[in-house]
Each structure stands twice: as C-alpha cells, then as structure tokens.
Image 1 (cartoon, rainbow, N blue to C red):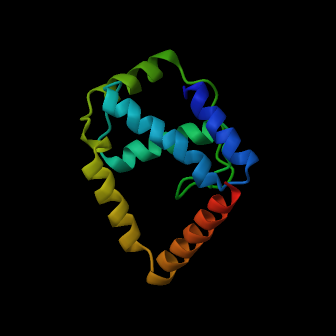
Image 2: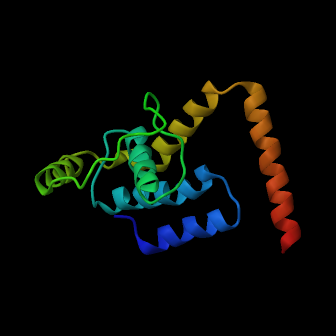
Amino acid sequence: MPEKKTIERAKEDKREGKAASTQAGDFVKEEMHHIRAGKHGAKSTKQAIAIGLSKARRSGVKLPPRRGQKSETKRRGKVSAKRSRASEKALARQPRKAASRRSLSRQAKTVAHKRSKADRSRAAKKAARTRKRERSKR
C-alpha cells in the first residue's frame, strides 16, 4: 500500500497537468526507498520499477497498460491473504542491489540507448522548455 504522502504528491502532479509518467515517478521513488530501507528486495531494477508502476496504476494513475496487455486489463478481485503473504516473502528473499544508484544509472542508460537520437533530442528540448516555464513561475 502506497504512503499517503506519495498519493498526495501524485494528485498534486495531476492537478498541475503533469504527465502520467511524472505522477507515477513518485510511486517508483517510494519503491526504491522501500528496497533501500530493507522492507523487501527486487531481482532487478526493472522489477523494482515495475512494482512502483503497478502501485501507481492501482492508485488511479492513468498509465498505459503493461506491454503485451490489452488496454482494459481484467481487474482482479482482492488477492487472497495466502498469495499476498507468499509474494511478500518472495520479495523479501530478493537482493537489495536493484535500487542502488549504480543499477538505476545503468538501467536509465540502457533504456535511453534504445531510443532514437531524434526521440532523445525531443525529450531534452521538452525538458528545457519545462525548466524555463518553471523558472519563470518563481
């Protein structure tokens, strides 16, 4: 269950008209914090990010569905206590390295490398525009 602060931050991002991925970023950040604190682990950085995105989706952030899933994923009912406990125990057995600065950096570089040069350039220009707009508000 996500913390109240995280949900509030995501709602604030939504009110400000920020992208769904920005809203979900708070949940991913919280997940990294949980792993570093030793609440549980993750096999890989991808898995850690996926857990955060999953929590964001369940909290109502309008993110696109996971790859290979239909746009209207079937809503599962309440997960049984036995299954929930089993998944928590499985995560607890995983290593904590997935949330390290080094592994997060490696993941970001890998994903960025897969994008085209034009796509990366477009994202950088958009970020520069956003920064400029944010600075002018102050």
